[in-house]
View 1 (tube, one colour):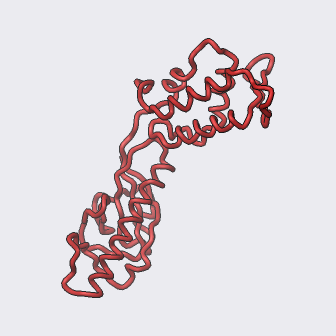
View 2 (view 1 turned 90 degrees about the vertical axis):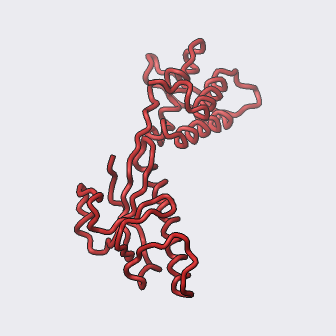
Length: 222
């Protein structure tokens, strides 16, 4: 898997951490945490200062923010193992093996949200998502919520890429919520004045409950 030259933020954060744990502690630095590496015999201890922990946190954030590595999140334990390896074997580069071992190919999926209190009469694209009526053939049937929950009156289909379904769902929820706010503004403008000035009319069937529409995560489809 050719990921060693991709994900520069992850590579830089790991390089920084690797270099920092190999430096000799200054007399003024305070040890705030000690990790015990029981993978070795005898077990080894690695003292950590605030600067070390800041580098660990930076690596965590870089991993969580990279679609190739986000499947590791939360990655603190794995990063601490990387730090211990870097300190124990100071001649080897541990960054490239880490990235080759843990980097994954990014997958493309569609995340579906059931929408409560918003009815649409036909499929429509808006603000990066697709709105679907409840009887649309594209809607997966793997989750019983898709068909059995009477409060779900339409669906939002949002394309997403990544390797962590939880983080992917969070990203798509933000996009879907943004689109719903757009729909609400469009609905209010239509109610306040006719004809509407919106350039993207949404086929909303039932005007009344749009103000209270909300999302329910139903699942994914590749």
